[in-house]
Image 1 (cartoon, rainbow, N blue to C red):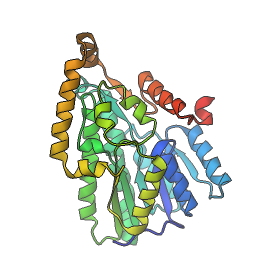
Image 2: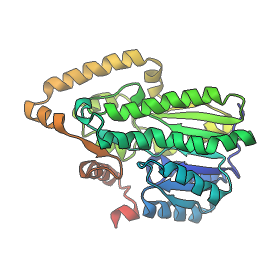
Image 3: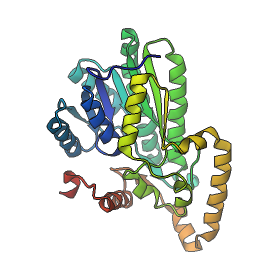
Length: 310
């Protein structure tokens, strides 16, 4: 399928306030896209819009939205179409999650919220925006999933399930839109140097798995996504070393179970008991323990924004 001419395209980008989304917004604006940027933290969106304008790009439209709530995605789609005139490209990058053992998390509100953000809201945006793209025979859907679909870790099963669900939906969508003129891309990040690394590394022993792949740069990933859009690519896996894990999931899962068992034997009983009852809403709007870990990661790299420092 031919790629997308980004210059002049009208793009709705969710999860724009930090990390991969923030870098992708800059890259899209630099290539002449008309942008609507969305996230839950308006001050960070406004700060980003000012930076893009100062760099010579067209000022993005700021659309605050909390995709953890059912109906918010449909409202966002309507608002974006009204502001942009149409949406040529939707990038489902917003994410959140829940940390906790499967038998503890179960179907709690935190788990259902994670599915709302990571699965149902992307599908709602697709439902709202893709029919018009297909009618125009021009458009693109970019869904950001995760290498967690291949290999999870104790305490991350509910989050991994949301991303695996989106990955399957994305693959199916691509088959259903063959010859429609709508281009579908799955972006599969492995470990990337964003704030999420702070909260992820709260899990005992997870470094044994994560450190096998050097941390990627979100700006590099943003450029790879742009290239896939322009060249008609269907899948972006980054960092490059993560491709082997994606191609050999059975081997990776076996090795991960081995590492997890080793970690479990090393954790003292008191810690094991505490972890067994812990449920943490993760993400930039998550529980205090997650927010503090994210902020510490960013402080260590000197990357706190003006809004976060205020």
